[in-house]
Image 1: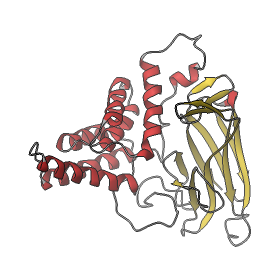
Image 2 (image 1 turned 45 degrees about the horizontal axis):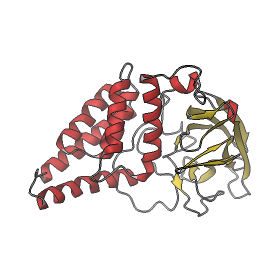
Image 3 (image 1 turned 90 degrees about the horizontal axis):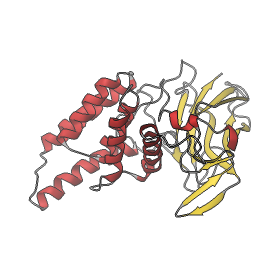
Image 4 (image 1 turned 135 degrees about the vertical axis):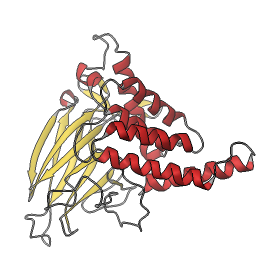
Length: 311
């Protein structure tokens, strides 16, 4: 999985850089210890033991600081009550880390989290344009199965399947390998290629039956009403989560049925929920966080959603 490889690469980078500059010497044992604490933090987070996750991620960072370590420390703090300041500080350190910097895969999400946490710590006046009360109070993550950092496990190329080790938590209830996805981050970037039923610049998650046969795909995301603001920022007025599914759980050879779940700009608030049956699968999309630009539009880089799947 990409961020786990980056974690190890980051540790190795620090080792050789500090040796070359004859500064702080990071030993191989320190790297191994940091990795072990990182694994323990992932396990604790996946079990909902966020206090232990904080302890283990802090121990990993004590041995070898890394951007991705601070990022997941921030996620852990954000899942605990009365730890907004600690979560904000960790995410800020992840974004400011330079050697090596936070992987591009996480930067937009981390910036969105930082903005939301900042608004919780320092709420603007209620009349300020473009910010809703729901957006200010939105947690960076919804509690529940599937919201956890993935364990560092080196695997061969997965050929476009979801970046998720099925041995980790987040499994389905016997019918699906995984029945919850968080976007962005739990799909595979299309990079102008087709994955399953969808293309081109977003990311696609593969819904697998218990025997690892694809039965559907989720694409994050399509949109309408885009407006370029300059400085690499834009707004949109509609969010579209594209969906597909086999006609039945047994019939995986027929053409898959395609549909979408759409949120208009004024519906884009934290905890908004929409569901739709597509073929054999019921999809439920929950808005986790969004940065509003106006009542009817929102920033394109501040969206985080949760998708649950059932029969």
